[in-house]
Length: 164
Length: 198
Image 1 (cartoon, each protein chain N blue to C red):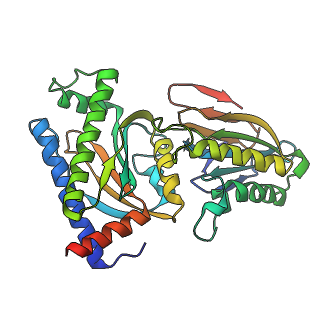
Image 2 (cartoon, chains in turn yellow, orange):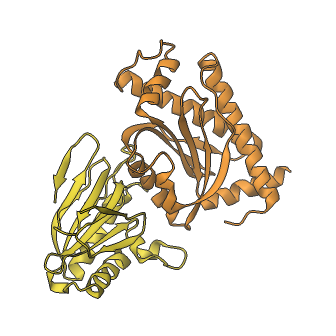
Image 3 (cartoon, rainbow over the protein chains, first blue to last red):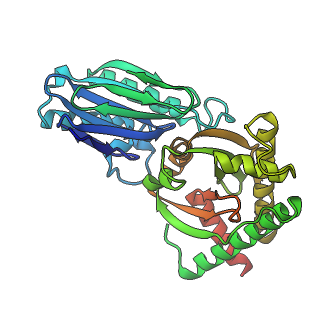
């Protein structure tokens, strides 16, 4: 079985329904990679969330995946549309780092922790269980969701790999 | 942001002057070892910015400085790990291959390189426009290019989906990226200041 890699870029939302598919957020810094998965339907959705709130945007929101408050409902809707059952969906997240560690926490560049809080509170609000969380710190992460098995792999530079 | 052709030309010319000053400062410090190439000005969609230094997963040595004052934005130097070490050799006037790891000394050398690039560039800009612009203290990070770049562009994302990226490289001996990303309000102020002096 050949692997089909689907890259999920900044603000994008991508879905996988076939076992050979792997959804990937490459090089997450302050952004959050969110993986929603239904283990029975084997449906996976990945979003690369850039900012916490759509109210921060000056323009119209055209890409729901960009903001925490619009990404979660959009991801749930996509998963359900592809055959997932809402109550079976579980969420795992990674990223939300503070890459440039000059700036103390709370500075304009510490958007990572704000992203993290926003995504978590949105998941709670929509009643989606968070079963894996590898967020914060000052280093980048690549997140891979194997659609066939639901395996979620976080890899880093110099800090190894871990499964969520 | 919509710029007229004339505004874009004025912007290009001032960026080039600033970079020429950077280049001269670097060159005099390294006895001609390090020079900057002609810049490219591009408006890039923010989604593609994390890909500009060889792909989001490419491990890079990044030197980052924030730009504050009348102009706000970001300046970044990105090197492969190999050329990061090589640039330290040049700064320290040591034979190539002398620096083998990014220890404290190497990191402070790279931070100094960031200071020189940024301050000479900003001084050139200040002198010609009268704007007050100051750099923050440089930070040196080794990690995935995408992770570093996206953390910087998120802030610019608030104002739209495109950002002006000024990109230049160092001379062939040390491949690297020199990126300058002002926010949109700053660009408007810069363009206004340029029009005033025309």
